[in-house]
Image 1: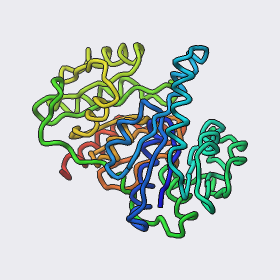
Image 2: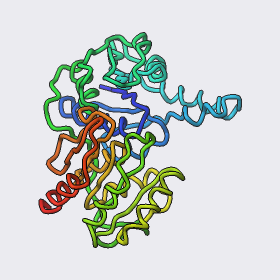
Image 3: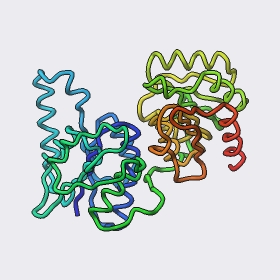
Image 4: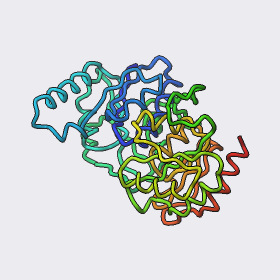
Length: 326
């Protein structure tokens, strides 16, 4: 059986889709699973060895140069790769017009199915027009966890129950740390950056948490110039903290993968640390905890909720419990 997964973005959403792979193979061990994903997240999907082919999608880059022949040629090549295989099932678990178009262009065998979401979750960007590309639409409760949504769509279509703990198919930490900026000793990482200011945790809380961790090194990641400036301000108050250089996606994933402790707001890299099974404190300040909380491991502590940011004391207590449990 050949299966295509269409989940192109964003980082956290692609991560939360990974357990579909293990679920399908647990019940159909001979299945071949391909995946269409935004090119920036190919390296994350590649960490799961059970995905056969990854088809890179580059809409974020293409839309900047649609008038260029090279871009149009690249788009034609994408659709050629997409249509190379005939699939028994195509799953669109994102529910957008762009992912529906990808599903519509994919080829299926006679009697094959194109399966997607009949509805979005609360606060999602679901686009109902995506259903015109479905042969079957699966309705889910509007408050279904982000990890469960894709799993339940596949389970409904393929006739099994997705009631086990999610398996992201990610490897454990490497014994050798090859990146020059990684400390020799155990380190904590703070994922403090997020695109929406309301989701941020107050600087004084980060400083209190970092001081409580001393002398453990605290690495501060950043993705934008504003986040770098915020990291530098935190590091100025924390002798055990260090601002990292600009990281590639592969390097950022490695940072999460090797951390002895991760503390982060509701953002993709925080969820990646949790998926790798690292001791993780997830901080919810202005997003609903039910949607993405790490609920699959005792190594994950979820604090706060929409409109109710956690205190520094709560985070410090959670950190001590996680580190003591090691």
